[in-house]
Image (cartoon, rainbow, N blue to C red; front, side, top):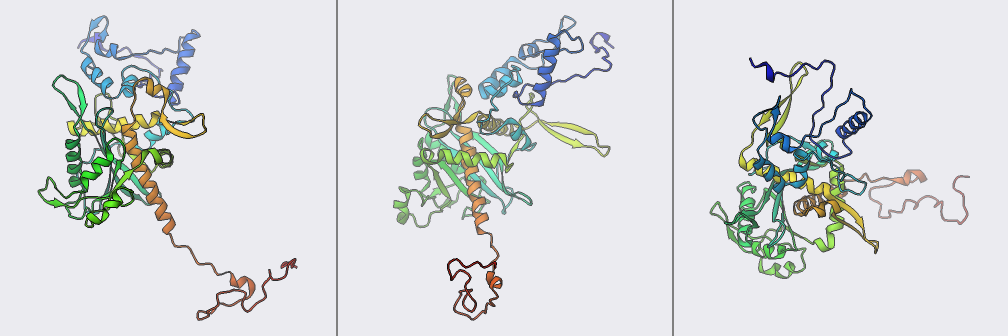
Amino acid sequence: LNTEIMPKQLPNQNILLSSASDINSEMYGQYKTGFLEMLKGNREWFVADLDWHISTAPTMNGKPMPPLVSPEVVEAAYKTDVFRAEQEYGNLWSGESGPDCLVTRATLEKNSTPMYPVFTSEGKDRKYLIAFDPSAKIDSAVITVGELVRDETKGLMLKIINCQNLLEVLGNGEKAVIQRPEQIEILKKMIIQYNNDTDDYSGIEKIIIDSGGGGFEVGSFLMQEWEGIDHKLHVGFIDIDDPYMELRADDFPQNSHKLQLFNFKKDKTSGYERCQQMLNQGLVIFPTNLNARNEIEFEETADTGEVRIRYEKPSLQDMDALLQIGICKTELMNMQKQKKPNGNIIFDLSPQAKSKNGHDDHCDTIMMLCNYLYNLRAEEALSVEHVNEDFSVLFNHKRTSNSKNKNPFNSGRNPFYTRGYNPFN
């Protein structure tokens, strides 16, 4: 037994270990309190900022120890999601949760649960939404998939189950957006995967595409019949609410209407306002983020009431989808409501996010999904049958089923007939 590596006993001590998050979290309050107490000279408190430099070259009693994380992992994390990497490896606290932010970290964490992504339909009664933000040269081309689920209390909800960033690594090591024809083929492949193996797209609730950035071009390709990975011929899609596609409706009478071209120039602000409502009402469920070892953490409660953490290592495909969904949540937190000098309200990335070359492609797909969920819930609310109130009893009038005159004052005195008449005398 090597006693040199055994930790010293620290009786009656509270040790708090956490990655950095935002300045509104409970852990930041403990961190700030401890730091101030230590500055005052209170020896009961000790605060240490340990960033990735310590983890990649740790020592114990002056002797080098095996690294907890490799520099390559840290470098990859900064390239994938700089905001999460700064918190997890740089120990930097963020302050994006201001009064004008789209959604707070606390809200997203509250509405996140440990789960694996879903890549194919899980039953013929399932309904899926697919949102696509295409790109040709800059930013990213992102496809996000959500499943519509119904909660007994909250009603119709959305579960984010998959997200793919259509990038490829070039020969020189640089990343670039996959070319447009291949983007469309990947989209078609995902449509088949979530289609419940039917010819009428019963598993697809809607395909929503940003009409800008080449989105209309993508929609035009989807209008034609096409052969899927299942080697079956499928009818095309058409958005009859789009003024340009509507002109071609007579040419494609058999096409499915499960396509929506989202007009960002016109509907971005209202779309994000609806997205904000859906997120804050807890109607959108996300997978929890992977931990620093890229594991999924499942909480399990034993019969004794003890809560334990079970760690599972996802596959590379699962890991990629979960990392992309994590980027969705980061971009949502970076989105901010802003007022222009002309008085117009817009949603845009915060100045802090822009200074770090932040993007909004991932959260744009979440917005399109939430906007559609909002409209579905509104339609359901309007379709609820209301009780047909009969106020004729207030005026001693008996309604007869065969009466053609529906005037409740037909056989009784109209209390409003004489001006100045007080019906309460």
